[in-house]
Length: 311
Length: 160
Image 1 (cartoon, rainbow over the protein chains, first blue to last red):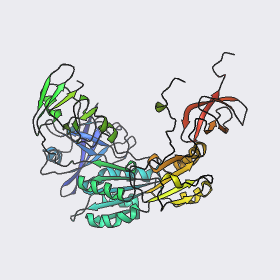
Image 2 (cartoon, each protein chain N blue to C red; image 1 turned 90 degrees about the vertical axis):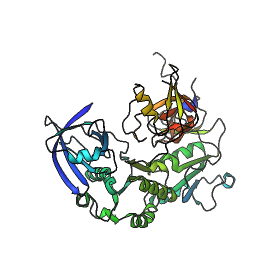
Image 3 (cartoon, helix red, strand yellow; image 1 turned 45 degrees about the vertical axis):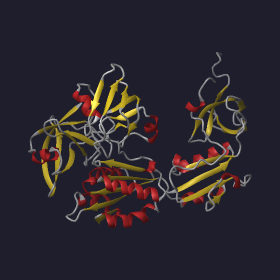
């Protein structure tokens, strides 16, 4: 199902961050969503970018997204910075792989830069439902976004850090004094998420307590050429270096559901019958990887010369 | 009961310590008086407590701690239920059984009177409920929350 949304307001939150307020065309409330959800917005011809929803979650009269301009991106954020008030845009229904654990004793929310957007949604819900939470927010020198709004919500339960070093200095002791039953949520650049994950592990945290929302993935190696064999028809689909399995299949007219194309959302999972896999996604669990029965076609590749798909 | 036990809610606890996949910073060993616990390869620096001391420990427990329960099947399940309700998750709990024979002491929940009966009984065998005397089959449905097997009346499927 596609949502058709009207841009009813646009605000510059920072030099490179634009907030868009989106409402339904017929004036009805929009679908409710779980805190930390995002919507995939169509931004120009054939482009879809995912943005976290920062506003109210239950029967909301608007969706709010904060779009950071990526000057090196493929043009999606540029398109959303140029969109005008009154214009209609299309988006998919909200999705989430970053929901709060509702029986958690306490929530530690850690954001870097524009990664504050799903964290704001978490903080808003935590305050509304009386859940205990604390926010750690690392910003760049030119300041962060949504700080005043978070200060109103969280008061002294939020700490803002000028860069990552002060964040790490405060986080290491904080990670060692959380009551049993605390869950941690983090969103920001990939390198920051990696380091939060590593520091939590060093403080003895099991990974089930550490929840991550990635909006960028590290640049992947183009890889070696291989062939994907479609087991049911016997067709061989060559996959070139730098080309993804998803792109190769789509180019052959083979329909594969897909969304983020970053190995995050889980949409393009394909069943595998044979051949070793170089898993490069953030979606499959370690157990799922070890069985070798599934591949995320948008980022992962064959580890050998051929991969047999159950298609 | 033609069923694959691996696909039921039956616990897969064993009599050796299965170490956690992550690296906890502190270990708490909850150990029954009847066991010396020396033969299980537990970390030397671990804090040792009895089940009676557990509430005080849970008040100061932190994320990063790992709990090792050394006890009989019936007590291990009950202690584990206490840990879960205090906020612990599966990966923060290891269980070392001190009774691994077929006839383990088991806790059996009676759905008729809600009494939990503790008895030396095998799964699939019958036990009399200590609350209402109903003859209960010890079912392979194991409740993590209660730390007990579900029991059902042995004649519950007979026509009256």
